[in-house]
Length: 263
Ligand code: KIV
Image (cartoon, rainbow, N blue to C red; front, top):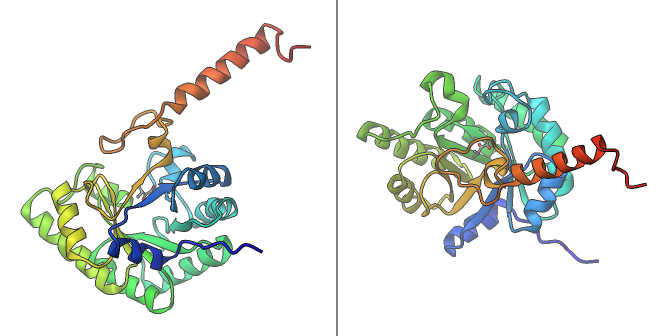
């Protein structure tokens, strides 16, 4: 029997120490998990971006714990050795550490994933240590936190002025000290991404945070060019939307013309 060496939280720390970049990608179902992993993704993030890219919502706020568990379980079924992280959705963890614990237990038990991700810095540190002390691997997410879009009014760059930078550094230190196994840095100045990455032993995962982060993550639909439009920091490496559209329209034309199936 061959033993599969799974990626774990310890792999991320070792990679940082060895200065090896890690590849994260979002995935929302078993097929995308298999394709992503076979092509080199080491961590599969079931982001609550699910709500916007797959479920047709106009923000991540309507995403529920049931949605996340349903899709994360599919990703887990599709993965072979990748580390699978599930976003705790809006409203499932902010109330208090106990609520976050119960939501994490549901996610871990019902999807069999490896870690949960929560948005927020210093103010979520208590919750992160509560979960971490109880054996849960927590990924923190700071900078642009899409679940707070109603408060900030946009998905624009964060920590642009001195006060914002100082707060983000404090956020990063607080979540690291609380036991976060790694920290997603979203849409912040590149030099701040570098500063935080150099300052901490905890690995950082950048998305619009410059190329010095320990890992990089992109949203599946953005990377592949399926999204109707991409954020400026997420270049498409293909135009899969056009490929899909072309295949469907050629097939539809054949059906209309009575040429499918051929006989
Ligand atoms: O929901 C998501 O896909 C995310 C990534 C953008 C980091 O949180």
